[in-house]
Length: 423
Image (cartoon, rainbow, N blue to C red; front, side, top):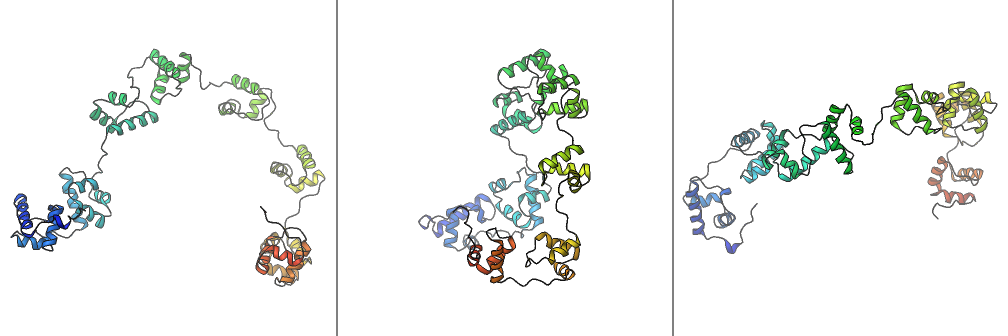
């Protein structure tokens, strides 16, 4: 919005009327507010309180009243401007003096982009600049290599005269239309001498066309081969060179083992090497159980389940005490009947709900009463029973509720207060 001129620069009443008449004579139509510059507009509103009163005072006809904006009118106006050759973008519309259409599109159509889509006007293509073409060329060559076509090629020809000139300006090597074997070998040697071992896709395709593969072209140029053609003999030789390494580090060798032998273990056996991973036998499972004891690592637990059906069966076969049994109905009842002042484990509560539906139903089946609610005296007795051991979670919550902190509860019980971490 243009700024209004300061009062010292405003026109007088007669000068304002003369400016309006001169503008109407030049335009040959009624004067509207958008036709006025900042000084005349400010003078009109200062001297006459409005453009309509100023037109009447100057003897000029009133402007015809335009219909109110609606979605259909917005779309109709946009189609008219598009047929006239105007780019239907917000910036172009405002620059051409159609800011009212932009505002109406925002209000009635959700924005100029949506209004353009509703009017079935194609989105304007981006305007290419020399800098934009250079950046696009570099990205295209890095990603795809090869020639340039389509809109980018047309922009190169329009702004640089040719695609070759545009590639030269971007510092991109020109595309060689005809490749021979000698040219391919020379290009490989030139690029490797420059320290660049990456070849674009177009060049790799040309090399495969003339030599059968990129590696064959590199061999012809005297360059080291990146990938080998794996054979059974080569796989065996590489495995023997690795020796008794526990893992094959090369993914290509790993894939070659599966392709030629079916597995890495079979390939290592063909090479006369021990298997990469020893298999679990019943004897090995028992030996590992006796040596490591419980709790057993996960691999050993899985081997117990595979060879013996369960970890408990494997422990019995190894002559060691099996792990604690799972919760059964009888074990739940026995635990509930133990006189431990209601100090139950969370796994016991889960077992009560699983076998009896609720803890209360399990207590009724065990013939025990619900323990009394926690009080300060009961908590003190429980803390003294635990001694210096950390409080379980349920007692921590009770201590916070009754004493404000676990240390305050420990002091009340006469137990050593635990120090906080970091102090």
